[in-house]
Image (cartoon, one colour):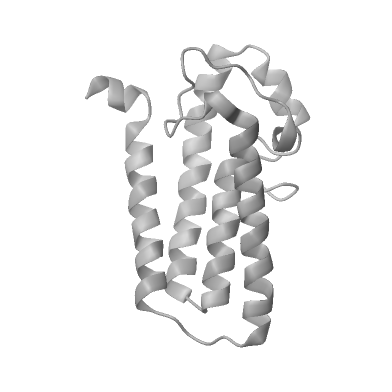
Amino acid sequence: MRAFTERGGWWVVAQVMLFVLIGGCWLIWSYDWGPLAVGTGYPVAVAGAVLAVWGVLALGGNLTPYPSPKSDAELIERGPYRVVRHPIYGGIVIGAAGISLADGNAGALTFTLGLLILFLGKSEFEEERLLRRFPAYASYRLRVRTRLIPWVI
């Protein structure tokens, strides 16, 4: 259990719980917020999916659900990592917000806000470990100012 906690396992548990809550809202409730929400929601969802998938592809074998880097990990600064430090987290939040808008789902949007807050905390935890593992991360963090959502936060 100690290794689970040290690797940041509780962040993963909380993340999965929010995924379940957001998905549950999508399945249980749906409201018609009109064509503006649908017209905005789907493009936002696609943008989030593109960012998250691009982040996964750029990360390659370094991918792990835990916020601690793998023992054989390398520092990735290519692809979306040139613009945002945690594109997978940001893409998931953007995608969930887009689907929730298209679905007209206030509950899912609320839990998506919770997911954003969780990912801000998880990324802070992760960055502490990345700084310890990769001394170059400090200068990378100065170059790439946005943490989750490109040019926003």
